Length: 498
Image 1 (cartoon, rainbow, N blue to C red):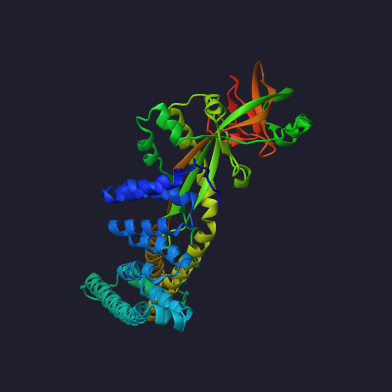
Image 2: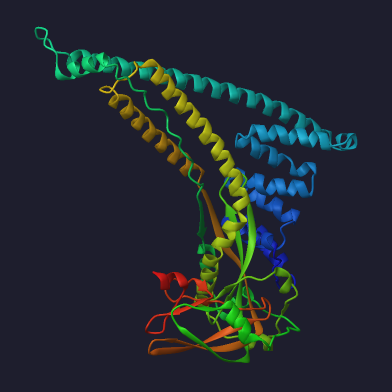
């Protein structure tokens, strides 16, 4: 997990400002400051408890469980237990509550029971109440299930009676005349042209969807109206010492990394230079029951807009620049910082989705179990309906086929609703910003497309030890494929293909 760099005492300032905002009733501001602190020090029990209590004030009991459980795992003391037990009970999650109490009672020794007898009694009482609530919940679910089964039986009987009445009313009342349909039925019965009714089709479950949204509203409100002094405090400048920059073999490395698509590429040479980057610390969280979260850090080249990621330990030793060093950075306005941070947030959605894949797999397994139960239930209903109907012949085969198509469509709609309810939504928020200058090798490349040519500078980054990709001018995707239009605009492989 990346550890972001801040000024000496800056983290304590964040924590104190969060406490003051909470005392003034500004919970949204307090949460923003506390989460920024939490992103840098995820195991600070004080801030975890502070976050749990603020979510309690908002009535967000899932957030109370998320931060309160982490706090209790780090420091299992009785004073952190009450709010956690209340949150489980408020959400009606009695099974995990009973299991949590059971584990805690096994973990606590007789010395803990003597030291905190009230905690021991509360765990025992809570476990008993949770087990009773689970049993009551199971009985209630079983009663509702039986009511639903009886309702479906009554509905099927009503439909069968309606169909029978409609058939009786459709019969002719003349003197023994037989309609054409009845003659076809009689002929088919005489020929013993019996056909098997259709069986329930084998349906597959679609993959669970994951929607990752970029939310920059808090940062936009924070940067709005900021002057240069406040912006320099919000976005500190840092530097690294003793950076080795490779000078040899750059052309061969360029040829291995980049490939020409619809252009001719010529490597013209390399020179030393500097590049500036905006590091954006991002916090992502999935809106599920256990709400998994984490932090990412994306670096944006302020000149090319390329989004990069390198191991956190490479910049963990970055020191704050002196006033003279900070003055050497290119001036950025709050609007420039906001545009770069928004770009980093968009670029980080794929990385956040990748981090959430293990959690998504567990949800997919639960969804598959629920889908299997639902499909088995609908298949059993269809088999019972087939067993109840007369064996169809050639003339009466359309009726069960139409009934099966109607049941299948209804089942697919149920599956769509099931997948929609289980769709995972996650959000990515930019929280921490800092600027960095690096010595790089700037390589000049000439890209030629028919009659037009364009010179491009490609930076070799000493931290990643690779060339940085170039953003596509059409879809804004970073790419190592070099393509261009007749006017010289850069294109990635996908845009060239389409």
